[in-house]
Image 1: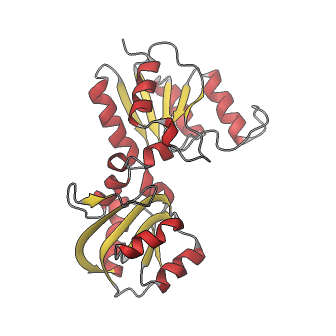
Image 2: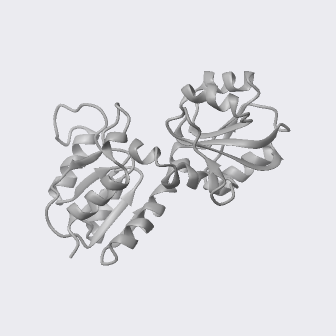
Image 3: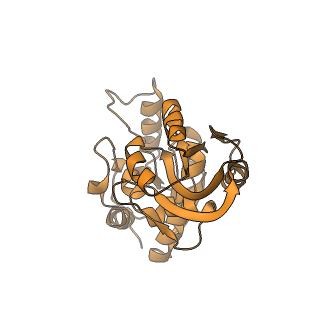
Length: 249
């Protein structure tokens, strides 16, 4: 029977913790690594409803993208949101681990999936050297207005934001799920990127991109990253066919 540590080791092998950014917090963040597992939950964020779903469905291993502990905490009690979630996990015997920026830098399991959603042909993307994560790809030229509409429909969000002429042509795209890293602007300018899609782009960075003739499309942090977890579940299922992998979006 599959043990929790088997799945934990598999994830750490796929996404080595040492590849995570310095500010990040990945790996096993709550619970123990001992004992068998038959049901695993994957999620973008560790929320109270997700933990309740784990309890209801009998999952004793929870794999998240965003860490349940992000930044220092001084106690674990029910007087604050993070402490309350950790207490609930521990009380239910649920082990919780995160694969965050160490997953983000593995493009085929993260931003390539976003690119496919946005119209990229299979394997027709590249991870530009000089960027920590994100992929570049081409699409048939469309207006920014049309591209934004397609993005909204493809990701199932509630809206998108862009600061540019709606008639501007989009054909060379840089997709970066989650938050846009402005340090990569020199690289994408050299590549001739005309449109950046990300979950979050700072207000002043949107205008900086516009100065360079690049349209910024803000599509939502959750919307640009939640597609990662079903794909990860499918990969894990191939390695552990005796385990049921569930996804909470």
